[in-house]
Image 1 (cartoon, rainbow, N blue to C red):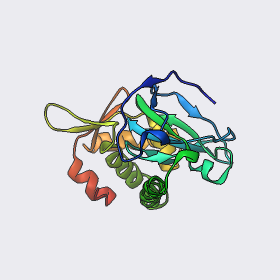
Image 2: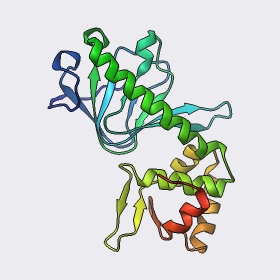
Image 3: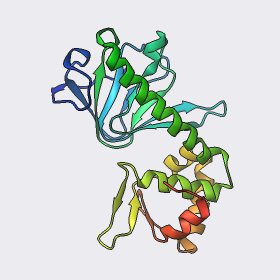
Image 4: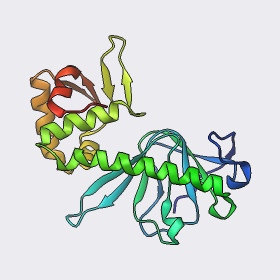
Length: 216
């Protein structure tokens, strides 16, 4: 398990100090917090940034199965005294705070339950990115979803963009990088996207939404 330096920091939400160690840990973009099979001593809460949980498929490819956004509590394997089931990586610079299960009150456990329930609903909706429609539709849907996260931004001309590689999109849509690159080229030619290095501008967001059926 990767270890990161700790800094005293105020925390958000309703969890009280004795449930938190009050040492939010910075994680740099691309770093791994833990790997599948690691021990699971604590829960974590995302304070800033965007993380993802990755699972290795039988074909040896990474598949993104979950995104964790600010306010999300994750690492629920500790609730079952089981090792980590996924690798968790930072998609942006982020901070997380450990939450120690043994110190949680009943009210705080309810907060954890609510967070995990909300994420379960989101994961079920996000499953559409991988399972429903042709790959072109799934790419459009996934980009629109990421545009609403910490990976998204807005240009001065009000066009939105997503900081994402073709590999990341492939892992989020259950496809190969080669297939994603080919379709992004076609979507560029159709005026839907403007690719740049590690960045995709949503040139025609209205048409992307029509293509994807995304209503986020």
